[in-house]
Structures are given as structure tokens and as C-alpha cells.
Amino acid sequence: MAGWPRALVTVATVVAIGGCTTTGAPESSMPATNPSASESAEPSAPASTAPGGPFIIEDAGLESIMPAGTYTSRLFDPALTLELGDGWFRRDPNGERALNLRRGPDGEDDLTFISGMDFLQCGTGPIVDDPDAQTIVDAIAASDMLDVDEIGDVPVGDRTGLGVRLAGGGEPVSEDDFGRSNEFGCIISIGDEAFPADSLWVMAMPDSAMQLVFVDVDGTTVAIRGRASVDRDAMAELMLEVLESVALG
Picture (spheres, helix red, strand yellow):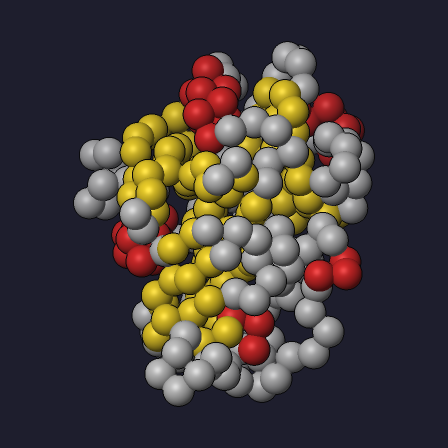
């Protein structure tokens, strides 16, 4: 993957929850799609499961710096463990299906794990149920509305994911056309119904400068998204370093 540092992999995608969208730098939260699994309390600092054990991501207080070390999630499914260097913090509640980490002075860069791709829509084609990693990447690569920079294998711990990087630079979808955004690119929906029904949406549009890695884990497809407001290459390098340490499942 010549275009990504070392091997591969902001997402200036659109992520929407319940019909509210955000673009560019992340600002809104990404709660679990299963409200019963979301967090109820936020201690002010991370705590380890045992002396010398990994930090629990959900025990890191919101807006609190997370010290460098090994982290695991008690909510995300499949099980997730990863190594983080300095500079990360949490802003958003996490859950079974979405886990978001931030960095930068304003939290403008982030790394997000999303579990279980329920629906895929690209252009005017049919809705694809439960797409796997290869199906999603092939559909994005085949879209003549998206400018694909790079596609290739990406190490995700001892697994291999499929990475895709989009150049962006196209025209954004207008507010009037939002309800048919799938006609302009690709949309992944995480929830009971596909876009435009209320759910978690990951939208790759012509203006999206996007880095994604998809990996199949025991029948569940996990999307790993890196996003940067300014230095995409630096965030891509950092994302690769984190992914090399990831254990899923």
C-alpha cells in the first residue's frame, strides 16, 4: 500500500445516529445501538483489571487523558484489547457495537471500532444484508462516484483486514438530497433497518477523505476507522501501529 505509511490505512465520513449527522472533525457521541449495554457511570481515571493487567477503556473518565498502556473493553463485542501510546482520551460513551477514542487538542482525530455491518447500500443497487469485509471493500472500489486511493491487506494483530483509503475532494451531498445519499456513494448501516431509517450510519460520499479497515472475526465484520482533521498520513501511521497490537475475539 504505497499511499499509506509503511503498509496501509480521516474518515471524513458522515456518521449519523438517529438521523443527526456529523461531518469533518468528530463532535457527536457514538453510543451503542443496544442502549442496555451502554455505560452508566464514568470514573475520572482508568483502572486496571488486576495489578499489572490491562486498563479498562470504559473506566477512563470522559475527557480524561488515557496513559500509555494496554487497554481492553468490557462492553465491545467481539472482545477487544489494544496498545495505546500517549495522547489518547475518551469523549464518547461506548457500547457493544461502537467504541471511539480521540486525540489532538480538540479531539479532532479519532479511532473508532464498529461491530457488525448490518446493511450495505452503494448507488442505486440493492441493499446487501450482513456484508462481509470483502463485499464492502469490493463495493466501495467499484463505485465510480468515489476516488479510491489505496486498497490492500492490513495486519490487525494476528488477523488480516482489508483496508481502503479514499481521496475525497468531490462535491458534498446537498441537504435536499440527503435522504438518497446512497445514490452518491456507499452507506453502511448498523441497526435494525437500513438507511435512511434511524441507526448508526457510516457514509462514504464523494467529499469523504476516508481510511477504513474491515476485518471478519468469527462471523462478525468489524470496521476500524481512523479520522484526522489535518495530517491524514500521520494518523494513518498511528492507526497502523495500534492495529498491529489489536486482539479481536
